[in-house]
Length: 307
Image (cartoon, rainbow, N blue to C red; front, side):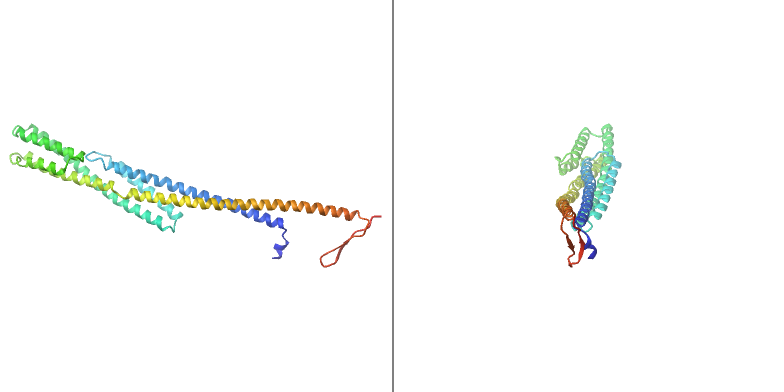
């Protein structure tokens, strides 16, 4: 306490001013780190949304030979971005239950979608292979002179509707199956026609399962899960930024107040110094003897009279 008492008011104010100024710069650095964290999260959550849409587009490629390596690369990129995002959020929002729950929801929906994509790829590969086999059979039947024109025409019609069902949602599966049943009545005379009928049924079921798989991929909750996390992070960032702005403003105002206090104290000190100099001059040039005492009434100095 004695050391504090010995400090003059200027030293105290100056110390407080420096502490506030250092605290302000430290807090601004913290705010900057928060902005960098948000930017990092944003840079890794946007690719998740884009890749999810690209995976949905891939599921629309029914009966099309796609580059599965690109799909696998997108899945790998998704996992990489999700891992970085998860690690950063665990550092930044370690105790936030909502964000932790939303991250788990994204991981769960991603795993389900990835499994459905693998199933879709296997079905699509099977469909492409079956399509080539059917076209080969159709050409063989068309060249076979022992098969009637009626059967060939019915096979061409059945193949046409199967392809329409593959690439369109306007053709009903039951309608195509009825066409194949018409063909079944005429299959007993040719093994090629029998094979065409059996392979057509397999292909028809494969297309139906493939469409259902594509529907499951499109109806995945992954996009919603990512959007929910994105909204939570945006809301959290805006709330934190508003609080940080108010605290930074409070620091700034405190620094300004302390600076004004220092200026006022300095002005008073200059005024007191002038008064003391004036008093000293008056004492030194006075014709009277002036006795100066301390608060305990002890004499500290006596001025000499001018002769």
